[in-house]
Amino acid sequence: MKRTCKNCGAKLPKKSDICKKCGEEYEYIALDPETAKLIEVEKPSSMIHICIAILSTIIFIFSLILIYLSLSGKNDTEKLSSASVIEQSKPDSSSDTESQPEETSHYYAVDFIGQTLGQVKEVLGDQYSIKLSDTTQVVYIDYPIILSTTDKTLTDESIISKVIISEDGKITSQISADTTYTELISILNFAKPAPEFNESDSYYYAYRALANDNYQVKASFKFGFDTPDQAPIEVILECEELTAAKVYGTVSGLDEGSSLNVRTEPLYAADALCQVYENDQVEILEEHISEDGNKWYKVAVNDVVGYSVAEFIVVNSDTAPSESIEETDSDNESESESDSESDSE
Image (cartoon, rainbow, N blue to C red; front, side, top):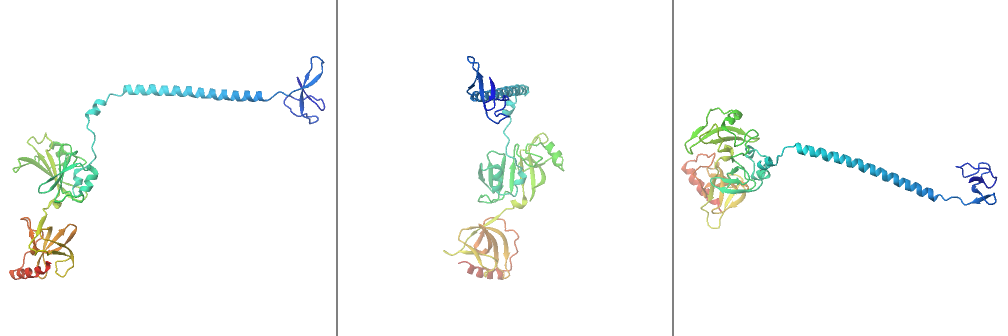
């Protein structure tokens, strides 16, 4: 079958759709075997070629996918094989992991001195019990540590003044409570070769001054008899600035239904900050003798600090208030009593 222009009869190239001689579109011409003449036949459909092209494209893409999967599978196999070799070469540490205790939260006990209970709870949590003695003690359940505060009522604002550490409790970045005395000599450079014997409790103590960012701390390392080869039984951290005994007083002697003023200054003319009543407890901060000879106490009532006449406050302990000022003569005392009666309402 040959391609011939129906207009001029010129032969057409295989890839040409238009006659280059006359510009007419070509038709397919075939030789009729019976008449031996050229006749026009239908143009072959291009759909077959399109289908073949699409099928070829699909086969090509599918082949690429198979090749990719084959290569990926080979790489995965190599990785698994390599991981297996590594796993076999690693020692079995499951027994070691089981025997080692879980790590606890990081803390240094010396840093707790001067902090509030709320700040300590952010580190150690709130799993503790409370013991009351001359101080209020916070005994932690999950940590070998006991905290003390001089506050009678424990709140998140209570200041930690004393810390007792035992076992493996952390003291500083260098030492813990299970450090032996021989190791402590090397780390802390103790001045004396052996701890001192304390007759009151029959233990040996070695003392060392430590510090945090705000306070000087006295560290008392409490030992038994075999001191060099033993760790301390416990370590006691105290700040004398914070452990000074507080003095409390009871409001007493008021007439029924009357109150005692807490004033801004130790003067009857000063403004009243608040009132306290019969049997109320106040903290006595210091004693003051005013210019007119009257005796006043500087007191703390909850969050209020002010002055009240001393006549109506009875000190609860045998310890006198700090920074006390000597009383004036008897004439001034009697005058003070008569004036102070007017401050009770």
